[in-house]
Length: 548
Image (cartoon, rainbow, N blue to C red; front, side, top):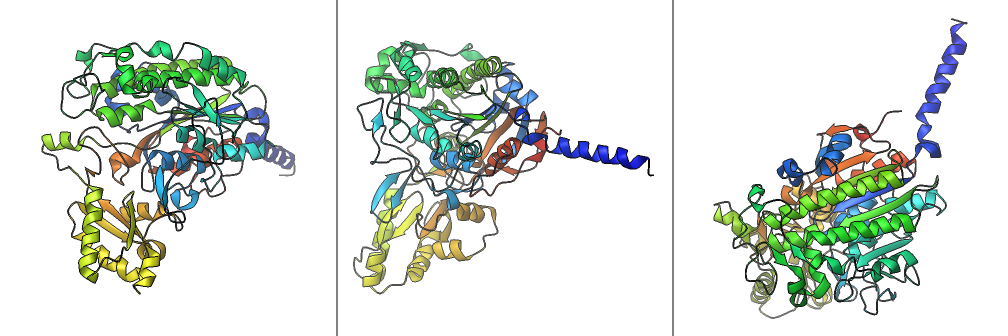
């Protein structure tokens, strides 16, 4: 035994050294690439699988860790909250991003999640750059990396949408860029980040790359091979002004003037191409992944969302946009492997929410679905309260994001308790057609919700920013025009999204245990050996990690 003791000590020391290997800078990825595909349903990976190339989605699924059961763990499932949740590791109850827009009870006005009148636009003379992350209450994954590296590690965030760039980057990003569209087609930013665009971004804007995409959009493959989507001619799509039918091909140059000029590219695969090309320029221009301090490149492909809203999730257009994104994604991965190194970056890919089939399409197939008019609801509520109290007391300030906000000053004047009004309206709403569930502020704040929908509502409810009553619609019922797809509900078609990890520190494989979208941030934090975002509620996805 005495002879074995030194050997055991050496073995134990070796084990400790290996277990702490992640703290060695050489063991960390030089670059973390976070990709969010806007409105990407989980089943797009399986539906279009046979038509994907070997270098894009298939490569990530086969050589990375593909988690097949990942969900958003709150409502509402919108873009702003989605990006915030992915990167903060927490839900709107903590990060404060309760919608893309919401009613501000202090000012009595609707606010946009990233608008900031105190900032100035950079790269444009319009107001589209007056933005910042000041309404985001918690830190992001990238913020924690900046703190950990003494702000040597860079964060660059890019999207077509301002909120898709700003919220992932967090409070301390070196830069966030988004697409202006219109007549310029430029990427712009805010004075929150910089005084002027960097030279590489100016060069991109001054090139003809964006304008050259005003060309014909036809299917990548013969349209007869697109058997995974519905008919090209149907009654469930909006299409573009100036074209009688929403059918291939689309002459984008001809249609541009009636559809916002270069804004039209947002609704096509070329919007994703523009983002990918700009991201490549950012890697080169900012020297990302070139030293031992981990950098972050955060990219949101938003054209998938614009197309889904316009054409619906079952359209030929959506199928084509994913096949083309697959090819562009493959090019981008190859670019990163050449520039940063095959085993020098860690990538994750997910979505900010899913989307529903067009309800009118579902109804045409005898599947229960429908539409809901929020304006009519507000009018009915006001009439009901007028009849109940025999006078117009103006008790409702706003109905927004399936929340009802009370006019509390008027409640005080009328000597009506908020709890009493909550109870009165709950009974009314539960009898209202197509409303499925009702949750009062009292229930959410003081009750322990045990069922699935109740828990999602509770995690999406912010004490200061949310309303007094939250209602949930029946499955497949939406408040939206009769064409195109949308999202926002607690149903699986909105909550279930893809999740793939790939690259350094990742063990190839698949996972089936239910995981939450808030688990991404702590998993990447663990790989980097950094602190979790300060309001994180997620868990490390250990099965995705390479064991040293």
